[in-house]
Length: 123
Length: 516
Figure 1 (cartoon, each protein chain N blue to C red):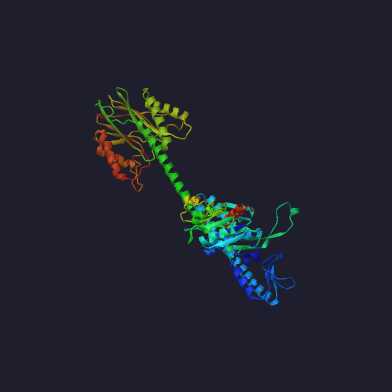
Figure 2: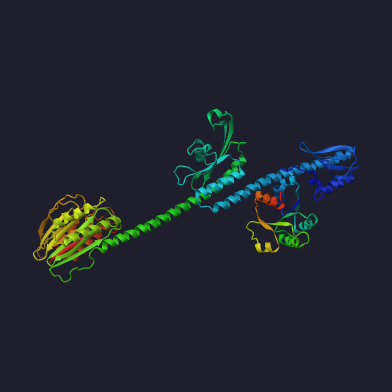
């Protein structure tokens, strides 16, 4: 099982990775990507079950990545959680439109994120 | 922390994979890397070649096999990568720990803004503190007002272990206003359960205190106790202090809010009381004569009266009525106490006196009868002073009886002013057996009678000096020749000048009758 962590800020990638680290013991592979295009490439190549996707990113933003993934054959079942900074206006309608499964605000609650990842992966 | 794996370190998607592969092709081969279980991860080497383990601390993560020099070199690189990764993870772990703290404190401040009660704020603060700092018990001690005793507004765990308000720990933290850790080295003996079951085993106790400092004062403190594990650290102290600062601000808001609610409630109550007083005042006034002159077709006497109610509503009353064509009843009185009870007692006394008086009974009989009635159904300790007189409008003879009231002044046409003789009666409603005496006086044409309640001589100026009966008499001497209305007018003007706006505690009532 694979989880892809997408954020243009390296420290946030590291934080999420660290949060989910204990899942590695249960055979989960943690992948990372630093922008939207790299994310899309990785999703196509690695087919992760869960993608934690930052919304505000250079090159391709989270909405566009989500939209592309959900429309692509064979990738539609990918569970996508959009990550949005607190205080930043999150366009719920746009999130629904592009087919995101859920959204979370940063600073995120590490315990809640880990629990969510476990429930999505069924472990 | 998850165990590092070589697979993750040099896996297809890792950054290190390319460097490892490049080194492997540059070294003399064949070289192979396998994980701890012997599963090949990269390259391959035939059996029997040199094997070098890759360690993370004491744990072997896998091994490199191949020609000795090459295998040693590759293992060295892998060892270096493993050490770097271990360091990264350790740092990331620290950062995550801090991030978790930030998130919880952020969450706490958000939660606190939504809470208005001290106990709810305290509970929320304790709950967040427990998520971040290991504790077997804890509590929040606060005072609602400066100088009032501390009390626990929230607590958890073994409540008996919490320090008492006023204990040395608590006093020391409050006095110094800084967070402190106390490690109780002398161990806490287990003493739960029956005596024979007490093992004498001991526990180590660590206590951490953080004061609840608000702008003006220290509101109390937060205490956490750990009986189960390691002593508290400076990091725990700093964290609890941060939580305490946020909690103190929220508790201060909550206390201010409570005060505001109490003030609003007080204002409402005051408004209700004022409304009640207005009602009492209305009852009082509705029973008294309000139209002057009251007998416009009578030329043989003139009569006037005025009552100024005190803010607190006293129990003054007065009345005059024709018992028959030649007999004018004149009544004045004052009920003990103030407010609605006084107004109601006054209404009752006034009605009884008037009812009995209109039967044509002599003043002293009237007083005795009303006294008996009031005494028989007076559950309270109220009483009323009362003067009642009957003026024969033909002869000028005044028959009267006085139940403890201020004796009225007789104003002679010639300018002489004197008090009517006392009849020695006690106030109505005090003693059921009391007898009342009658007396009489003569009012010749031109003579007048000035009746008043104690509000007149006791009217006070801003320095609490009283108007006194001497001044009442002086005004009457000056106004001796004037009609009733003007005498009262003059007295009123003098009273207003004397009191100079000072608030009066009693009703001021005056009645004046003059034979023409």
